[in-house]
Length: 461
Ligand code: ARG
Image 1: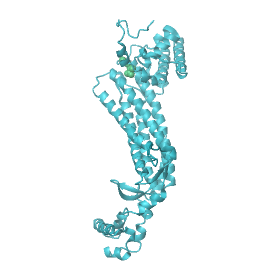
Image 2: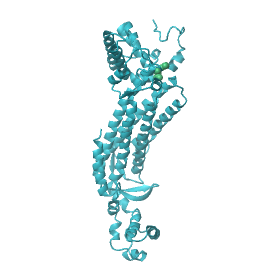
Image 3: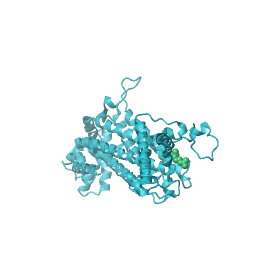
Image 4: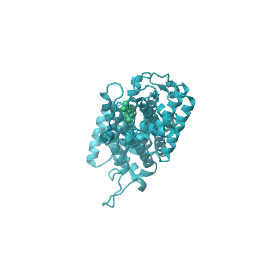
């Protein structure tokens, strides 16, 4: 006999296309373990408060556990007629424990149930993403530590600006990831609030204990307002914001790696394990990993936008629109995790910095021009005046096909009598970097200190 989902108010079955349209089982089956855990807590609470007997509670918990085993052994395949994971579990429970299974939904609604499931899922996923961020940071630190004295051109407007310690450049990404890690920790505090027991929207007539289920499920608190509890998705939007920022950061790094791997930059070599070839051009080695990360960034932004728009006009409390919160959330989680993993592997074993080429790059440009200005300014020439003078030298040097280091002392002194022999030392790339010893700057002493505090930050919980 076909099981009847709705009350006796309904006489005929759903149109098959509408059943399919309404169903979320195809994707919310991913929530099943959380749904079972949430239901077990609910059953325990029903027994704890005397709403059902202790034996009934135990049987419900055991029946739910059996469904968990069936699912894990790939023996639970609910069809579309179940509509969603909540109904699928309830039906199977009735098959296992009989009519008692029909008591599980006492003092509960799918509205507080699905909110509970989604939060448990997201709490887990956030934890996993935070661990992945730590691994990503660890790899950045490892490479940075080996490259404090490796120099790399620094850019503004993608024009050579001032040379940098490669470690300093990589640490910039470490700090972005650190904020991402902290942000997720922050989001987690608002994910970890229990809506269970809010009922459909107004609470329940039964003497439930919401704090009891919250404690069983390791929630840090309970929603204080039942309407808010069943219709809030701020926590999911916040997560998507945090996920979007992770993708922004990964995408910027990706873009740099792609540039660095080009013939024009030639700052890195892609190793075979992380690069792909062309089906026609045998010479090619393509940076598919960072390109895909850059490309996938858009979908996470899209999911954030979709969720914001989905929420903005919803009257309280539950509306079926809310079922649309899941696919974008799941896809964002999968995308962020995949991108973090791929970028971590790419950094760890897929890239080699071409240090010789980098050393040449920083020595063959005018990125030491600021230091000539600083040299004069330190000797009493007003900075703006020094700046103008140096601009003139750069212009004449370019015309003469020379670099600043090629100027004779006579030429320097014609420009300004304050120049002395030590100007040559002052404009060496290593010196240019070392001298930027202001707090947070690229000077080697600063970078060494920054590495130490970065290591210390990694131990935070
Ligand atoms: N599948 C639904 C969802 O994801 C579960 C909640 C259904 N509640 C309801 N009142 N129709 O939102």
